[in-house]
Amino acid sequence: MLGILWLVLKIMLIFIGIVLGIALLLLVFVLFNFCRFEAKGKKENDDIVFKAEFRWLLGFIKGYYEISGEHIKYNINMPFGLCKIKYDSEEEELEFDVEEKNICNESKNINKTIANIQKNGNIYNIMVKFKSFFTAVKSFIKSLFEKAVFVKNFNDKYCVEKLLKATFKLLKKLIKNMGFKKFEVKGTVGFDDPSDTGKVLGAVYSVIPFLPFDVSIDGNFDNRELKGNFYIKGRTNLWLLLFPVVRYVLTKPVWPLVRDYWKGELNEQL
Image (cartoon, rainbow, N blue to C red; front, side):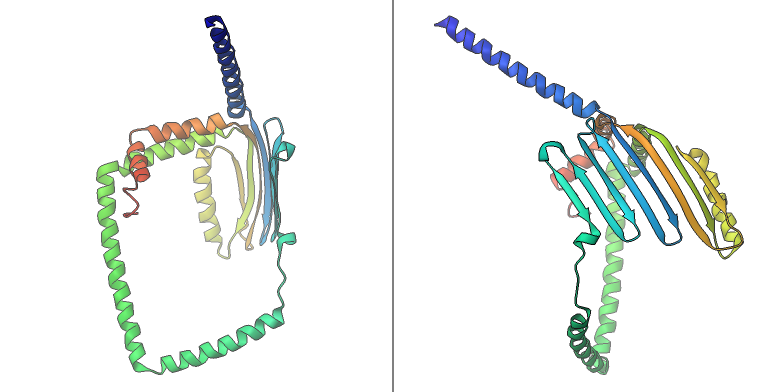
């Protein structure tokens, strides 16, 4: 009898071990499998064209997002019909009867106009408006004071400077872990006043050395112009993105804030 129970227990343990092993392999596969992405776009005055594509889990999950003027469409596909998200602004666009809509709005506008004339002709209503205006100003000043007190108490408890440093460090890490293989930005700017063009170019080129991608901006000192294009290509995985975020949340300056927010202690003050 004990031999049979031991055999059954052994089979159950082996089965549980196999299930846990498969789950662990799937988790490792999902976390460490690279997601390849590519995006490009251009802008010429008021026209914007943008397209982004991604492929994840050996291409089993893929999708794209496109913008061409006012036309927007995107598509995300998962294998075996697990999920399919599709949108096309031209297909989803609703048609309205303009004349019927205008007829409906016309009577409403006439009624509103008559009501406004009667209201504006009443001196008492004008005094009410002034009173409500000053009440609103008083409430605004009071809310500013309360926010100032909240910011002071918030800084005393959580230290905004340390939070900003930790957040800036996280952003730098995430940008690095995005795995950009190519990131190029090219453009031309021009304003009515050539001095404004020069100021903008000076500001741009002062920060270019600190950017993790190639930027080339030319100036048009003769005409007003704003156009450009960019190209992005890279690969990353969930581990490279999730691990820095988890580490950031668990650090000393951030965790007390997250804990108190989760408990709802900040809901009434935010």
